[in-house]
Structure formats: structure tokens, C-alpha cells
Image (cartoon, rainbow, N blue to C red; front, side):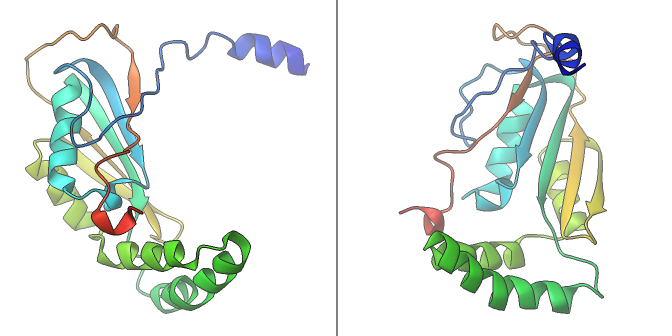
Length: 178
């Protein structure tokens, strides 16, 4: 049964390619991918607007961007969530990983990151249309999506149907390096 499932899945996503690169200067031609995703990385960008503009640049007309990121939780969840994030998580994670500072930074970066409506506006400012978002886990995270609507077409060697996930390696804010 398991082998049969594996056989059905094989080849199912052959058109998905993952690339790692600087999200502030993606190593791709203009208008060459159908989808760009980023998960829990946009808040670490030294220039969010530039990163969003780069994502839009590489999208084909009609292409979509998906941003999964921490957000501001629902009002009734905030006190408990921020107490956990500020007081409990850094201590426990510091013991387990030996890097308490990374979890203190996590708390700071989440606290400074815009709420859903503000990030929707940032996506619109970067030129995306049809921007919408949905909160998940009591608003602790949100999935934002937008579409590139223009008629230009570019070619980068990626056939239609390619999906690229950006993984930033150089556009991180200075406070996260080192």
C-alpha cells in the first residue's frame, strides 16, 4: 500500500524547483516563474520592500506570491502569547539549543513586524494585486497572497509551471548576522 502511494506521488511535482539565493537580488531573469513563496523570512529582510519588489520582478504575469509569516495575534491571545514569547521560550530554547539570543531576537522581530493589514499594504505598494491574507493559529501566523497582473513576459529557462521558493542568505537584517 505504501509503495503504491509512493509510486503515485513520484513525478507529481517534478516541475517544482527550489533555489537558494539573496532575496534582495534574486538570481533569476524577469518574469520567469509562476509562484514565489517565502516562509518566516520576510521579517528578517533588511529591506522588505526591495525583497517584495524582487519577488514581483521574477513572477510571470498572473503569477502568485505567498508569504507565510508571524503576525500580531488576536487581541485576547496577545497577553499569553507575548508572555510565552518573551519570558518562557527564550529560557527553554536557550537551554535546549544553547542560543538564547536567537529566541530573544525572534521575540523582537515578531513584535516589530507589521500586522496583517499593514503587510497587505506593503504587498500592494510592491505592485501586487488581489492581495489578501488569512490569520491562522489565533492570528499568530498569517498567509498573505498576491498576484502579478501585467502583460510583460520573460524567459529564464524555467518552463511554465515552475515554482521557486526564496530562501534568503544575504538579505538578512544586520542584527541576525554573526
